[in-house]
Amino acid sequence: MLIKRDQSLLLVVDVQAKLAPAIFEGEAAVANNVRLLAGAGQLGIPRYVSEQYVRGLGPSLPAIREAAGDARFFEKMHFSCTGEPGVLEMLRGAGRRQIVLTGMETHVCVLQTAFGLVEAGFSVFLVADAASSRSPENRSAAVERMRAGGVHIVTTEMVLFEWLHRAGTDEFRAMLPLIK
Image (cartoon, rainbow, N blue to C red; front, top):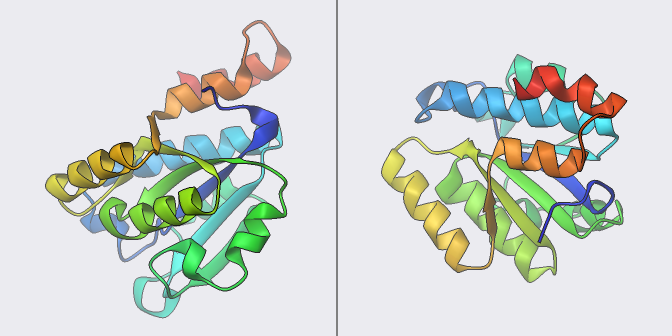
């Protein structure tokens, strides 16, 4: 199953100021979240960004906020985005069945969100190189558990190329800086 631009949205989970510095390979994960947010913005794909307990973990990183542009930000207290009142309705309101999922921490908020989305009937694509945890063991265990639970495991470049669908277009040329 390919990710379709007109059927997908991007959900970035908890890439926040006080959490990101402790994340395994966090700089790479943040960079890939920025690439996905920018690419989705260029292609008109709806973008959503969650922030877990902002008072304690701080807001999203400045690079995430900048790349997010007009994305819809929402604060949550539940680990799963789907546990937060109104979030499933908000996501369903986009009229899309595929959710491209990224964020931190993979084994807690991302995993619980992924399974909540699957239970709600969405096709979920975890962007493995844009999701991480404080330890590589927790990250790996979460990715394997999600794979076994029906979540599709993809990479940032897979998502960008599937959204583009073909080369030689103005959109493709505009996205090249994000791909290179």
